[in-house]
Length: 598
Ligand code: ZN
Ligand code: ZN
Image (cartoon, rainbow, N blue to C red; front, side):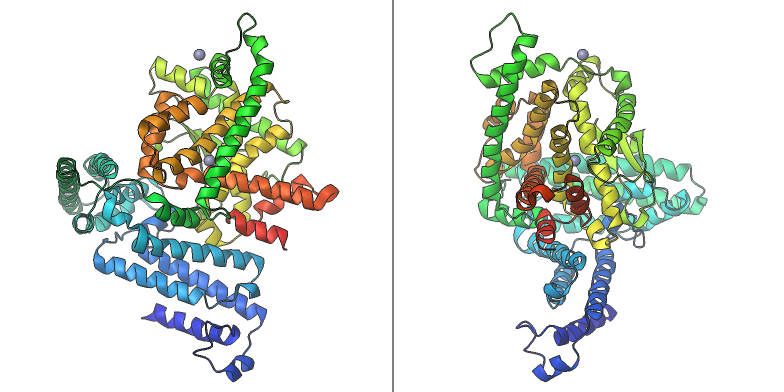
């Protein structure tokens, strides 16, 4: 096969350039001297390797490609059977071996970080198959809807063309779900229940939106007939999977054979190391979150002392500081925007944030990449909220949208509760996090790094950590004039991030149960019951991801403090931010290495 040949040629030429113990077995020392390539040649070889890796990665993961705007293989739905899984594993092992032929010390800073990101990506894929084995116990791994939804709703070619792509891609749906059933040997209760819910929704996409689109299309009568038949088959395959899962669920409940959803200490540490890419272990991070929680409680108690007389002049402050803080938060949360002004008030706030960042010269802003605040498009509305919708690496010129979902679907009580949560102060912090100088600003900088590797395999802890870091940085720089109410709300918001780390580890590793988790979140992080219950569900279904926000934030903040210490008077916050963001969405420990040893 062609791709293997190219791989071998890279291997051979690199063997010649890096006389390390890894390659000496196959290369004569004399030969090493003879063809020592230049730095440019090594750089070119690495670029070629990375490009080749990405091209082949899309062949294996066409659906992921569709998500980031790479549509070349949009008509393909890989079947997760033994044969394909073995091929994936072989691909990753081969690529890892090839990657390791490069000597990182000889690469530029940008390529060295790409090296580590690729290594991390490949090792994660190998870990997933050989150790984590979610394909055996997480039935919600299997769901075809997402990518079909993106193809249906993204305007990258004409609607009729997209429908024909969908038709082709639907052919493998029955085989896909047959393979899924063969893979699932030890399902957990929580993941089985989730898979039943989600796949029932998936069937609706085909019998609903896709079927309607066919009716309204310009496809020929013959094509439409074929399409309808294919929809019937697809829906039947999905429904069969759902009823098979319902049977499984009944069975594991009856004979008590469900696998524990907790992955335990050993797998958790490994998954943490690969998913987060931190300089700390999961255990160390957990301890750090615990002490940060105490520090934040202390700061909140000071603010409570200060604010209590202002709002509760006639009553004594409760002895228990946490109770007093909770009362204050509840009391001041009534200051919020009107429900029909939710979207417009967010839109109005962005210029003020931009102005503050520019006046204080906190970091570089690109006026040519404006942020467009819009109501979340209907098909993207899962639950209320706000999120950044950034262009993928293959379409970097497209707009960045700040999607805000209006509160249309809420009754009065729900709307009031939501608005109290995103009250006058918290809304500003949300906008810092999502937009300026949080996610939106970071992504504008990231797109400048021009590394496809970094934009495709960007590190989640760095991306979330940056947004969380900017909340504190903005307040420290005087955004909001050090208003105690703003700081109090900030700490509440920050506690959520800290608590995410604590409960994820507590539940997955320490075996914490629902009651204890809920009381921790409600009493020590001031969360409403509904929010805490939602978090409990999420912490059962995923592992490690909830720690990404706090890990990234803590590491960025300590890096900054370390550089301040080291550089003394020469430390410049603007330069720190611009330089930090210049490496793309690389893991923080890699950025750290590059900033400390340039
Ligand atoms: Zn109200
Ligand atoms: Zn975020």
